[in-house]
Length: 565
Ligand code: SF4
Image 1 (cartoon, rainbow, N blue to C red):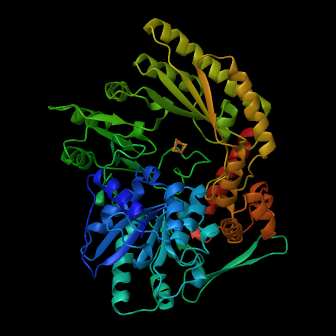
Image 2: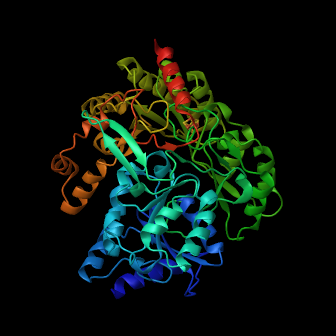
Image 3: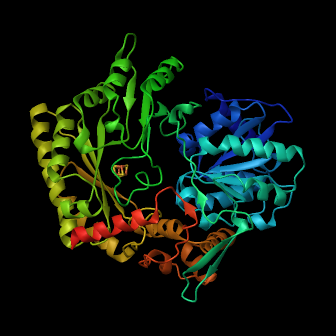
């Protein structure tokens, strides 16, 4: 084992607070893997929360594993060292379970890297009893696990906190009874919300669409998403603090799950249904009970500004002693309260993000984003007047039905926002910055826009060029964006079926780029990315039941189209 890598792990651990060490042999060991680097993964609340839950079990030890930095990957290879966990520096291959927490499609190739560096066969079908059980959870797995289904033995469909205990109880019992891998998987597949892809077989029509997905004997045809009814039964919060992560200066805590607005492109409003708010008393207790060194709390939830007990929370955080600062990711322009803005100003917030998503009101109506131009501009004014100088606006391009008028509307709204910024900036003697974050629309499974294709890369590039030109002469306005070619890959992985896994595998094994790997696989990737799927078609993810009926998605889809007719 490389001493350099071991030393590096120890140095990382030295800077952490809250790390759990449980060396006891005989416990069920879980290597909890985030398929990206430590810096990214340690700001992921899902990973942090499951780490805490698993380690609170008396019979289980969970340790973390991340994708090493590039230079460390070379060191692993050079010294023939197998990937090891942070806490005990034990090799991943020696754990009982390797559990991935997957939040982004573009991290899928990193799953293969972690398996390979661990010395675990990449394909599930090649693993024998001597290897850890490879499981995966996280939002990607409950909207469409199919592209990575060849590499994962078992998926947890839904909210991990709800099903993990039941899973671990049964796993522990079957493990002590010496169940071999196949029997173990068949038995675990009986738990509601557990999907063992090897026990389900897809078949295809001549035109490449899906003919059907057949469940193994005794298994449900559709796997139901599990969700927490008692949202306060577990607190979702940062367990380990470290300065070496994006949100290293704050402790994150979830205050709500789901979103009442149901924008038609957005997963949060669909797969996280129903909307649940966490109890104020429990949140306050958690915040107050935290290590006194923590002075800043990141409030996590799709609708932070809609949290109904915000005033009370605000009061609580300002109570005697040193005031705790808060941070939020983005807010709804039409539900900004002065309390919230005052709190954010006091907390040192310099930028607030709003998400108009589309430039024109027509297109916003299409996606069900119930915000008028005036709502957005009023929101901007309120923020700037509260002494927060910078605004970030999120836009999507390539939305279905989009025309040049909608693209121009992005520029018009930007100019109007900038005028407000200049006016208030002059009054206050400080002019802030307006940042446009412009990203391609990715059609997401289980949303009403899932049937629509992604816009062509060439067209997206032209639109970006046009917008960039339009803002190039505006001082104080900057634009950031995803590269359309990466959005293409994201859509492929988001809407793909099992066959797409072959491209992932071929790309990883050959080290070629995506285009070369696609050609080698004989798959037409445009089929997944640029094709409008039929409303009566069996979709690759139709055997996953997210708790929202397909009829509701179709109704919303038709309603969107009616809105632009
Ligand atoms: S885009 Fe925002 S407001 Fe709309 S459903 Fe998603 S989280 Fe809610």
